[in-house]
Length: 388
Ligand code: NDP
Image 1: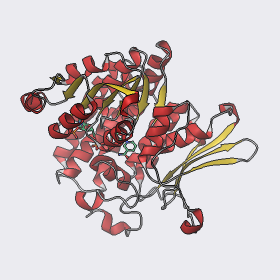
Image 2: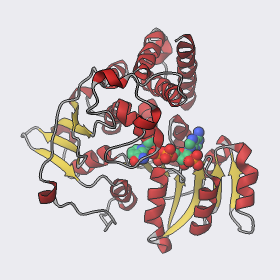
Image 3: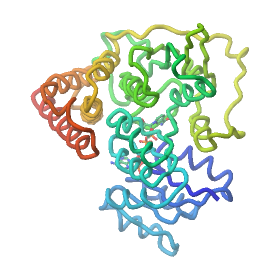
Image 4: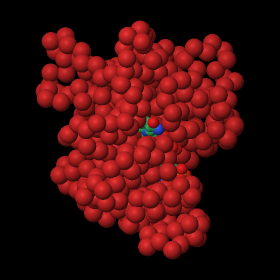
């Protein structure tokens, strides 16, 4: 039996992972499941999958979790330390699907104990790609991509030499406001931004898709994951979300990964890697689709893409600043304090204000240095928003 843990089990990626695991329960020994506020779901899945431990990130909800698990022999635990303890329990495969930079520390802990880390939490690579890669190498652990674009690139590289890669193209649906007139964007509401034309995802990533902050994070993730020159990474708007990424080789070949917009493909690929196994995803009928369209992204509409290039050029801890400023800007957009287009303005201002910090690019990267930079960027973002 394979020992598996799922961090962020109650979220969109976590639930898709559980869907796959529940289809073959005899193959898996579930070590840990984590959630935050959705205690009922966490307890239900922990019971269904006979997990050893269920952890909520929110310590105030520990009594609720204990009550929901009463009568079972599943341990209940809460808080960031409990998450780390659960992540340090031996497991063969760990899903990292907590949203935001909160996912970084448990993912590193899982790598330290040698688990294969299925990485949905793109923020880990954006904030601390070098640290994640170094931790994996040191512990002979494997990081497997779960973001659909990165899974597509990973699959497009199988059997190939990365030195022969000239281009990596990741596609973007364009999100909720792809075809909105520019002048309407300033007044876009969180509810409007949280609807996605193709993918069914968590609220935060769906809004990030509308602003293209999600794609900006993915561009940086591509750089960090495949350790390639940022200049070979391109973004292409592809409204149908059927081609997830293309890898271009030095002989002119472009290898495209085509599949339905269902995260269970990328999750299942990471779960069964290096094998391929049958997955419960739709089989595409390309004739019925009839056309796939593409266009270059407009960086006036989506300034996050320009910022991503600046972040990659600066390097070091700039990714951690970018992500944390984006997380705070998103919080404030969701609570109605700032408008949709102001999110990018806030993030750019935080990057500008912190660009003089020598530790931004010079300091050695450790978990503490990343978390310190994350904290500084959050307070800087809050101060900027306070003044607006
Ligand atoms: P969701 O918001 O649906 O789920 C997030 C999960 O994290 C939930 O289990 C939530 O618990 C938990 N959580 C929230 N805050 C904290 C915290 N501070 N500490 C610990 N746990 C917390 O997100 P998604 O599943 O959409 O996304 C998860 C990650 O995967 C993100 O990094 C996202 O960018 C990435 N991703 C998602 C894709 C998708 O299709 N959804 C595609 C590719 C990547 P609870 O719900 O109980 O409060």
